[in-house]
Amino acid sequence: MTRASLEKDPSEVARMFDGVAARYDLTNDVQTGDTVLDIAAGTGTSSEPLADRGVRVVPADFSLGMLKVGRERRPDMAFTASDAMRLPFADASFDAVTMSFGLRNVADPAAALTEFRRVTRPGGRLVVCEFSRPVNGPFRRVYLNYLMRALPAIARRVSSSPDSYVYLAESIRAWPDQRELAGTIAVSGWHEVEWRNLSGGIVALHRAVAR
Ligand SMILES: C[S@@+](CC[C@H](N)C(=O)[O-])C[C@H]1O[C@@H](n2cnc3c(N)ncnc32)[C@H](O)[C@@H]1O
Image (cartoon, rainbow, N blue to C red):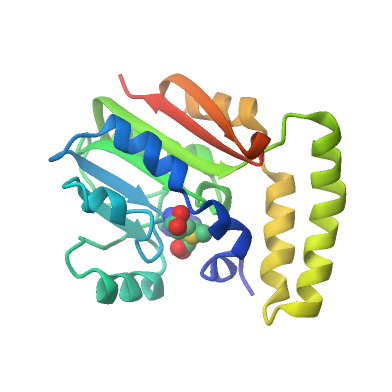
C-alpha cells in the first residue's frame, strides 16, 4: 500500500481536528469574491465552509477517487485534479492557498510551498494546517512515545486498515516541528511566517504572506 493510497482513508485522528481552525483562520483573511485554492482538499470538506461564504474556492487533489466523491457531493464546487508540486494554474491566480492535513504527505514539501507561492498574487495568503509537536515536554513524551506506539497497536486490533494508523503515527513523528516548518515556508518564498498551536501543539496552523 502506498502512502498516497493510505491517505485516501483519512484517519479518525485527522478527522478529530478536521481543519476547522485552519478554515477559521482563513475565513478571517479572505473576502466574499476572493479566489482560494484548497490543495489536498480530498472530497472537499475543507473547502465547503469557504464556498458557503461566497468565496470562489477551488478544491484540488491528486486522487481522482476523492474528486469523484467530492463532485457528486458538491457539484457546485470546481474540483480540479492537481499535484501539489505541479499546479495546473497560472502565476498569481489566487488570493490565498490553504492546505489541511496534506503537506505531510507530499514528497517534496518545499517544492509544493514554492508552487503555492507562484500561484498566489502578491499580498495573498497561505494557511497550512498540519500535525506538529506538542510544546509541553512531559506531554510531548507521553504523546510521542506512548500514544504513537499505542495507536498502531490498538488499530491492529480494531481497525480493518491498521496500516493507515501505522503510517499516520510514523509520518507525524517524522514531520518537522513548528519552527522548522516555518523555516521551510520562509525559504520557499513566503514572508511574515507565523504559527498558532492547537491542542498544545498536536496540530499547528502556519500562516504566511506573499510579497
Ligand atoms: C487527510 S486528506 C485531507 C482532506 C481535507 N484537506 C481535510 O482537511 O479534510 C489528505 C489529502 O491529501 C491528498 N494529497 C496528498 N498528497 C498530495 C499531492 N501531492 N497533491 C495533491 N493532493 C495530495 C490526498 O489525496 C488526500 O485526499
